[in-house]
Image 1 (spheres, helix red, strand yellow):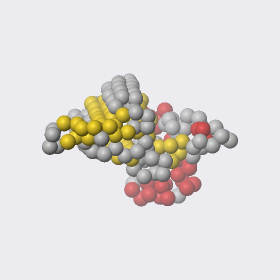
Image 2 (tube, rainbow, N blue to C red):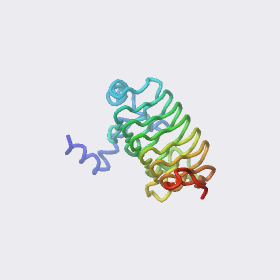
Image 3 (cartoon, rainbow, N blue to C red):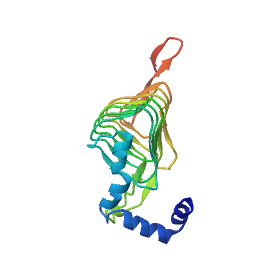
Length: 208
């Protein structure tokens, strides 16, 4: 099986026909055909304890990893079409979150309601429909116990380098994060800026 998968990935013609067979035609090309959903997606609801009201836009050639004691609320959308989605132990996602890979959540990461974590960028050319343009990877990493407030948007870097939210950082509600956020800090606003950092000697947050 590994040899077959490697052959498909390295052979453009084979990859094209496999993708055409698995996915619906444009503009719905991020959705698997019904038969492929039955094989690759529906079983995950039972195996992973994901609510049926969640939407899984999953590709069989990328991973969806869900660690122990994760809690995924209803109306969450998970898309691994551009890269793996890895959720560590005891990750919690609030109602209505959107997670588009490649993204990695370390243990204890928390998302409040309607947070969007996007590990990709769409083309912005003005001479063709957006769903026909190239999509590029922009990996996002949330380190241990990073917490993101309601309505915040985490967008990967346009240069393709990983964007990292450091461990124990806190992102304010409705913030828009496009750059790295250091560990043990609080960031708010659009674009998000660090306003406080944890002082271990004083045992409290202090203004930057």
